[in-house]
Image (cartoon, rainbow, N blue to C red):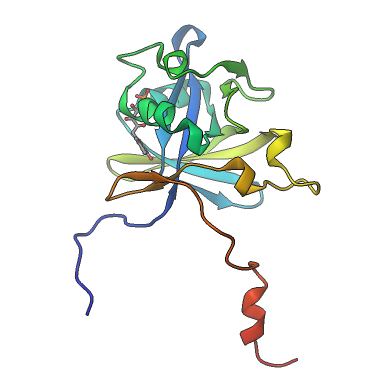
Length: 193
Ligand SMILES: Cc1cc2nc3c(=O)[nH]c(=O)nc-3n(C[C@H](O)[C@H](O)[C@H](O)COP(=O)(O)O)c2cc1C
């Protein structure tokens, strides 16, 4: 027997990313976002659902770009802080969180140096959903720390240790064990040769 839950956009687990932008006078800002997802392969695009009220959204409108920075489980406190405090109230929030920034190489947005994975995106589309705006950025460049990549250029998620968010219970967790090989283990159920 299953129980009915109230209607929310319930998907889990969710990623935890830091959307970084420049505000007025090139002041770096960053906000935590969990409603983020890849949404196109060619050109490569990532979408983030951002509330109208966020300083981040205003910054994206002005600069037409942003970066997505992937925090690690060890950066949970700093990440949570960036999701609790707006750059409107605390202009220094990025350095208070302990992050240093560098200019992105292609877009006009900051990279969070301590995050092992940084993605530069240029604004491509947006869709006003009501209280959130689905902002789609096109990937322009990806920077990955050497110690989180495999020899053939993929991300080793066990080394990256990304911070995973569980909505509802509002918890941050780490990723767990490898279960099986994707696009592969299901082949055993395919019919034919
Ligand atoms: C775990 C977590 C996930 C969040 N996800 C989102 C999100 O996907 N979209 C959003 O608009 N706000 C999200 N927030 C809230 C913003 O990060 C928060 O309002 C932040 O202070 C906005 O900063 P800004 O005004 O400087 O842009 C999240 C907060 C936390 C703690």
